[in-house]
Image 1 (tube, helix red, strand yellow):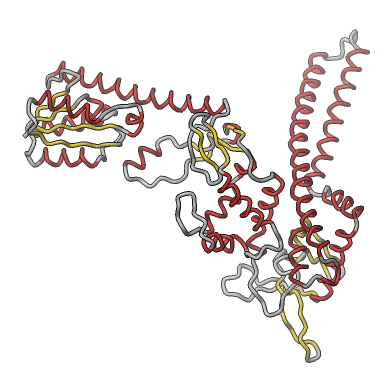
Image 2: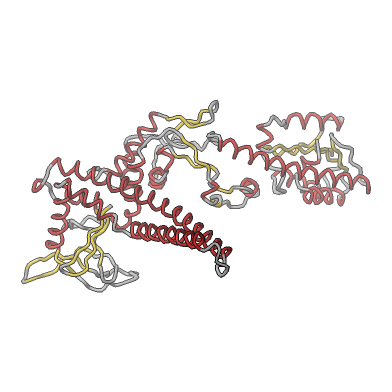
Length: 499
């Protein structure tokens, strides 16, 4: 029986490479329509694990095929080794192999030509892959979005090769971020938002009715919504081949950040709100608290200054009456640390922390002082250190320069050594300045984005019902907007860390 084999990959389909044309030419060479057709549509020639190629080789072993016709050797495979493996099996079972586009003979000259042709085919495939990747990179550098990622909130414009805002979906993105960053949101956490979107019938990007918490979380972590879209982040070379070979493919390996290409797209949310959402996400695990019969104002925020473990709210007895405390003790199974046992009165700690928060929210001057206090972090200590080092390097170079000026005629002075030392100090100064620039930018982002946004939100909610008109839940929401952690050093010393 005569068989024909045809193949085209996904990339070749896009370029107009036709399966139908291959079949037509192969049937013409066979001289009859009575042929068995083995067709792999959408499969790369770099792998052997193709369903109809496998079926064809099985039929060869069964003796069902006497002659095989293929359009071109690279339709069998793009890799020389794979081509040789296939032809070896065909020779073993005495199957005659014919190609439409080349004259193949099973003799030394024919085999040599076949191998050379296979090597060029493999080289051509590698060249195409290289040119494709290079072209995509250059296009990204020109500000184009090279691949439609079907990102929620955007439509892909094929004409301009960029993202445009999908107003309907963008509204949902804004709603998700508002729900998550609003302390008075009726929906608790990521899961609550996902449930709400499902309940009100909002479809996902793929038109599904159910929203999963992980999808919402990925949206909250997607910096692209601020207008900064990263391309060339992952090295995905070989992933397509692995997928077609049936191998499990993890997310592409992350490239070094200096290789990423930053592309501007229309923003949907502000950078400040995004940064604040990231701060909340980083604290989410510790902030997630179960519903207690007795609500603790600082639930999830208190940490022991002695051992570093979290302090949880507990009820105890004092003179026959219920008494509530925050205690450093873990009683659940599997706890890595049982805690050191330190405890502090709930009323006392609540009163102190809330008093500090009220003083901050009532006093604009206090807010400004708060920003100064924020600068006492390790970032600002390092900034001061780098400034001193830059000053030392400058002074050192100036002293050496003066030494050269006044001692040019002194033969005991090694001018070359001094110049080398000046060069070394200059290199150090440049390095310190570069590090300083990075830290200054980081410090500015920390203060201007997270802190200011958190304070503005807290003030907004506080002014709605100041003082005694706020119940414990509203106070709790306000505190969680501005407080990252409350560290209990001892019964009289408490450190409050804010966003």
